Image 1 (cartoon, helix red, strand yellow):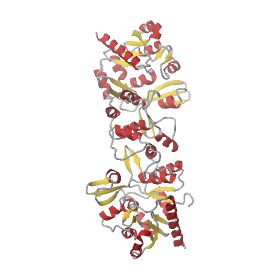
Image 2 (cartoon, chains in turn red, blue; image 1 turned 135 degrees about the vertical axis):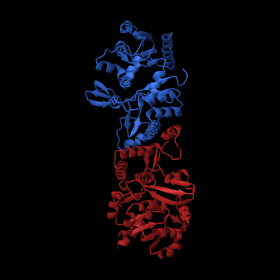
Image 3 (cartoon, rainbow over the protein chains, first blue to last red; image 1 turned 30 degrees about the vertical axis):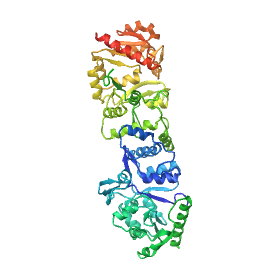
Image 4 (cartoon, chains in turn red, green; image 1 turned 90 degrees about the horizontal axis):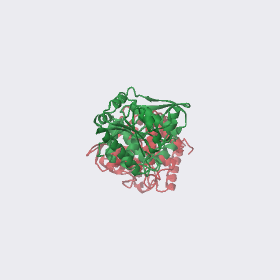
Length: 290
Length: 290
């Protein structure tokens, strides 16, 4: 795919302020991955990272539950500095991407603050508190997106949506990664009204989440923990639902929801797996246009 | 000397904001030195320092002329965070010192912003621009302290002054290190009115500055580049002037200014030199009280 033809909408509901620095974990994960500088073994942050600033922050008695690497801090410092100069988060993200040689467009869902709040049996938590501090352990009773009623989608998100030939929902947590984006004023309607093909990939394979708390959350929020449970979530939002070969027994149940369903290998272990899934998705978008 | 009996007044005219972070080079130098974690070879910053955050900041195209180490950034991040929570610079400094195990009191001259501005033949510069970016090379025409008319001395500075048995002007640049402090509302008068012994140590030995641009500045601002030139600056401010043994020929000229003058070794190369000079100064304060 040529550069700038791929627009990735990043969830900013997971953003958090630590030490007065604005941290965007989702944007950074996408940005570092596309720049080829992410730490693949650890699964987050930058490769070749060191932790000396954090060690000093710990000396000063600050809370140690969120890890901030030295190189990663360079990003947070630069972002916070630019935001304090009244650049929008979209502008700042574009600026950071340019310097890292990222050729795709990373669009924050909104330039306005929206924060995912997790209502748990242990109290109301920010996403990072739930995810990092409490390692997704508390039982979840509900999720809200503070600020979303007042937030507007970013203009690079809207431009992307207007110019897109297809919408892809990558395998991700419906409640924590897709819902925050859909919570923004007008976005759900724009997605439903989108004319081109809309394709979703199941994050649940064989009753388990490929990564993260998707299965646990489906269960706690009263949904079926399967590709069918996820497909029900996407019923109004997508035309084609991709599930893993292992779940081919779910094909008919999903088709009954009024969505096309296709199977393939969705578990991306190697670079070849990723390329193969991407090609499969692209081929489906072409079929749809024919 | 028992802990908390030594109050060190730190010049904050050299403070600067980089990347939206509040940097206090003078406070940090004193703090790191007293905590025993300063880099003695380099002469500034922390020992065992790394530069990975800065490398990332350079990747983002930021200005590289001021070096920010990773551990040092921990300090700047913590300070900026606490200042953004409306703690005063004095409170923040006390907090940082406590965590670093510093038992002496470091008092910022003021909690209000005062910035040293250097008028040079190349234009008006901040202290760090003059000192670090242009390495003291531009010819200095004058120095001002922006904000000093509106600034109040910090209360820990005033408390220190009220309770002190002696005032010591360490060997330092009159124009860049002492003048900023004296520029604060009421400070010069309080120093002149101080009843106990006031002792100044010459930063000029044998016509040269022990460190930094003191000699160059004395010359450019039209003063005699000698211990006598410095003593003239301190004429109203101190009772006893300490000059190096090498400058004993200046003793009489200084006494003629109406100040007591004493010679000793003022060049501190080893730990023993520092202790010896400190003991000499302390013995003088006792003589005065007798």
